[in-house]
Structures are given as C-alpha cells and as structure tokens.
Length: 143
Image (spheres, rainbow, N blue to C red):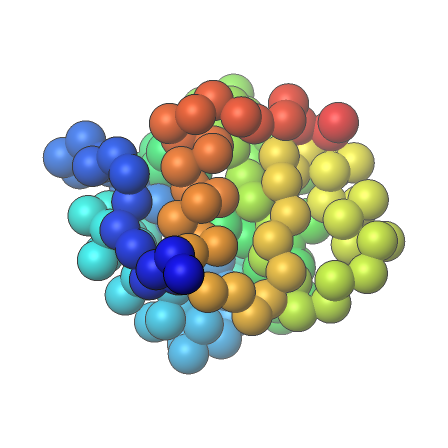
C-alpha cells in the first residue's frame, strides 16, 4: 500500500510562494500547514480582493483560489488576475466544496488552469502542485 502522506518528489526552490485565497481560516490554516511541510512559503488572503493585491505584490508561483467568498468571489478575483499583465501567467487552481461540473466549467472559462474539489488530502494537494509546477502538466487558462 502506498503512503498517502508522502512528501513532494521535488524540493521547491527557496522562496517559492503559493498564495491560498479562502475565506475559511480553517481551510487556509490546513492548506498552509501542508504546503509548509512541503517546503513552500505560503501567503494567505481571506477574500478575493486581498488575493488579487497579494498576487500583484508578491507574484506567487501558484494560486489556490476558493470560489464562494464575500465581496470579491473566486471567479471575479481570477478574472482580475488574468486581466493584469503582471499576474496573468500565474497558474490558478480553483478549489470548491461543490464538485459540480458548472464550477469546473466556469472556473476554466474565466481563466483557471485547474479545479480541485474540497476536502482533499495532502497527497492530492502535493500531486496537483507537482503536476503544475514541476511536471509542466498545466492547462492554459480558459481551456
């Protein structure tokens, strides 16, 4: 039986940042712990507007974006990030507790590169991060 709590196959470059945008403090904390254990520096935003600003300022290697948030939701934030030259090429993975096809469709339609249903395990998160950052298996925005 394989170890579902394994480490990343690749060690991140020093200072590799991942931005986690979610209005749930619990989700942010949980994802942050998993990513830090994998060697990443983690930035947190509690809503979409904060996420857009952090993305512009910090230029993370990857953004994990919740959909349902107050004020600026994940779809709106993703659209803003894609329309800003400095952040347009940052990979975005939409995260949602609602695994319905409509969220997947709209997420990719507005510029997300991938979709990940919540809840997820450490193995699933690491596999997704590796696929995008190290294996170059990423869908272009909007496909």
